[in-house]
Structure formats: structure tokens, C-alpha cells
Image (cartoon, rainbow, N blue to C red):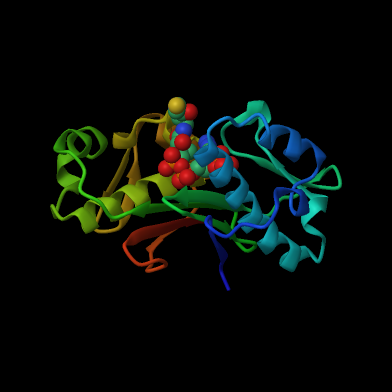
Length: 207
Ligand SMILES: CC(C)(COP(=O)(O)OP(=O)(O)OC[C@H]1O[C@@H](n2cnc3c(N)ncnc32)[C@H](O)[C@@H]1OP(=O)(O)O)[C@@H](O)C(=O)NCCC(=O)NCCS
């Protein structure tokens, strides 16, 4: 399979001590907001579950920490960085992780379908992307954009309008294009799939 997904329900998590290593536990306790702590932990649990199956190692042997405490994490197993493309997302009670061993890059995003103010819509998208006005469509487009900027590794440090998606086909401009080119202009597969009721979920794979 091109990728594997793991969904974690944040309402039924195991004790952190059974999942996290020493340095992860120390970081976990620095997170002051319970929501952030739960999401951070759930994302790690999801990714560790995938990696233990893929590599045949134990949950606590895997360390998932972001340099400086934020941004894209680095995954190590026994001090060695692993080079399997992975991505984490969390939204409203769920965390999801993906690994894509046969791709070079992967990004995922999960968002609850909700009504959002029109200022958000106008700020986040380009007019020609707005081919539909439903909450479901706009949330889908949002997840596609976030999956792509995570695949690039920039997150939203690039302007969301530098990623244009019309009919599911992405085009980059500005700094997003520079990043895409620096990754070797990978061939992108962008997929939105039903994963959880009332949510949109998208995955961007780069080969
Ligand atoms: C990355 C980003 C697009 C995530 O969007 P989001 O919808 O809020 O969050 P999600 O739950 O979908 O994803 C969060 C996960 O993305 C991953 N991630 C963070 N930065 C990433 C990056 N540059 N590239 C790829 N993945 C990234 C992390 O694993 C993070 O989860 P974790 O912190 O628990 O490990 C967004 O947070 C971002 O771009 N941030 C950078 C801009 C920034 O720092 N702004 C200031 C915010 S106060």
C-alpha cells in the first residue's frame, strides 16, 4: 500500500508513561494546555503504533521530538534518525498519523466540517479556488492545502495563497514553489478520503 494511517481517539488514551521515552516525557510535562498536551501525545501514539508495526520495535524506543519544541518533528529509533516519510495531524478529539514508505514526502490534515466566517475564506484561498461555497467543500480545500504545506515541510510559514488547488490539482508559487523545487519537484498525488464522520481528511504524497 502507498501509505498507512492510524487514527487515535483522544478520549481513550493509555497512560503517557507506557508510550513516551524519557525526553518526550520531559517535553510533555512542559505543555501547559491540556488540549495541546493531549493532541501532542495522541499524534505521537498514532505514529509510534505505525512505526512499531513497520519496524518491529517498541513504542518507547521511538522518539518523536521537534527541534526547538515546535514545527515538523524528527523521529529517531535508538538515537538513529529514520527516513520513512511521516506526518501527524489532530483535530477535535482525534489524532491521525501517516507513514508512506514508498514515497519521498507525505503530508496529512484532518479538520472538522464547520461553518467558518467569510473573512477566513477570503484570506486563506484565491478566488478561483472557490468553485463551491459549502462548508464541506471549503473544509476539504483547507485540508488539501495544509496537507500540501506539510508535505513541503514549511507548514503555513508560506502564504496559503501560494498553494493553489483547482479541481484537485495543486500549483505552487512564490516561496512554496521554491520549496517544491528544492525538494526535486516531486510528482504529487493529492487525495481526500472519508476517514471520520463529519471531518475532512487529505493526504499529499510526493514521489
Ligand atoms: C503545520 C501547520 C500547518 C499545522 O496546522 P494545524 O491544522 O494547526 O495542525 P495539525 O494538527 O493539522 O498538525 C500539527 C502537526 O503538524 C506537524 N508539523 C508542524 N509543523 C510542520 C511543518 N513545518 N511541516 C510538516 N509538519 C509539520 C507536527 O507534527 C504537528 O503536530 P505536533 O506539534 O503535535 O507534533 C501549522 O501549525 C503551521 O504551519 N505552523 C507554522 C506557522 C507557525 O508556527 N505559526 C505560528 C502559530 S502560533
